[in-house]
Amino acid sequence: MTPKGTQTIIFFLLTILSVLSIISIYFVLSFTSNRSFLQYKQKYFAEQTYHISYILRTNIETPLTSEKNKELFDKTAQEFATPVHFFNEDFSKIIYTNEMNHTEFAQPFYIDVPIVKEGEPLGYLRAFYDLDQHIGAPALSMFEKDSQNQLRMIIVIALVVTIIINFFLSRILAKPIKQSAYYALKVLRGNREEFVPRNGTEEIKQLIDGINSLLVEFNNVENWRKQMMEDLTHELRTPLTSVLTRLEAIIDGVYPTTTKNLQDIYDEMERLSRLVANVQRLSEAEGARFKLNIEKVNMVHLVKGVYEGFLFIAKQKEIELNFRNPNKPCTAYVDPDRMIQVVTNIISNALKYTARAGKVEIGIESNDDELIIYCKDNGVGIHEDELSLIFNRFYRTDKSRSREYGGSGIGLSISKALVHAHGGEIGVESEPGEGSKFWVGIPIDNQLVSPE
Image (cartoon, rainbow, N blue to C red; front, side, top):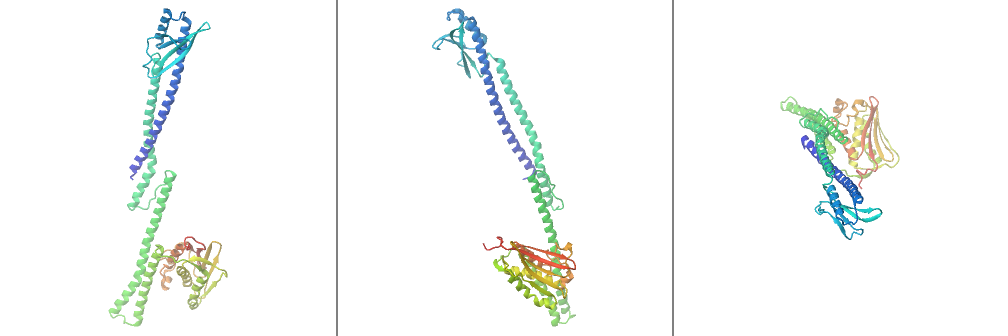
């Protein structure tokens, strides 16, 4: 939907609602007005009838059928332009009726008034009126028509004013949406440095916050993609260059085809193969393209098994490697193979960056909800500004040392992805020159990964 379409739809919706509301108000006011006028007419005609009866009561003579009385009735009826009948006391006989016809009235209405003279009832006067339009009250009919015309005029003016207000209101409401669409179009065209201004209603602000968050995340992913490609290119170029150089030298006869030279080429190819395998594992882990084979595992036995596998390497480097046994059952729902990979990575890193005669301690702690595996060393440590980066792909705090020990900067990234797949968290605490402490938190009863 285009921004113009948004404004148009808002305008039409507001206009339709306004028109329906105004029409409803018009019918309510019209009904109320007609009812009030009807009551007013009935009271007016009642007063007029009593006025006629007063004239008749004052001037009537006996006998009732006299010619003089007939003239009086005719004169009064003509004067008030009202058809009248004069009945006897029990309405059984019409004593007098004038020639004016009331049967053609659109909305007939009559009033009966007793005629009493000197305390003696003479009969009843019945006057007929047309509530729709009475010729005897032209001012009243004109006032009613003028009132109805004024009401219609007010409704028309209200409709025009409402349409104008709706037009400007739709522009105001559509403005933040237009602005968001404008900036979204700029993002599609490659301008990802500007953020959508936060304005409009609360829901629109939440939508804009979501767009800006996605834009930040997209920029981070894009920057990291570029950095990853640069790092990956660099990592692949180094062993490939070394292999090509050595092979070219052997082909040109500069280097002899000795076992040592072939072994060096083999070592570089093996390093390249490990790098490609690590990148593939990282891609699978971060893309969740693997299946966790969840089991209820005794984590003490799992961690202790990995610890025992590193005792020989620690002894070679003259590093004191200790395992702190919690001496209590520590079980969790995990994939044992994937968790062994995580523990292996953090212990391997600790041994790599700990000098000879250093100390590394691996242990387990637990509470009611979480089981924590930690690996603590007294090695070189990590600077504060690098703590948030060490789990990034290909990131190494000391590239020369990492390359010396065969590191590619992918192990911790794989570990992070595997731990997150288990619903856990991984982190590090470190001080430069004091050592580092890596920890992995795994929920003990995690519905995300438990077999149930």
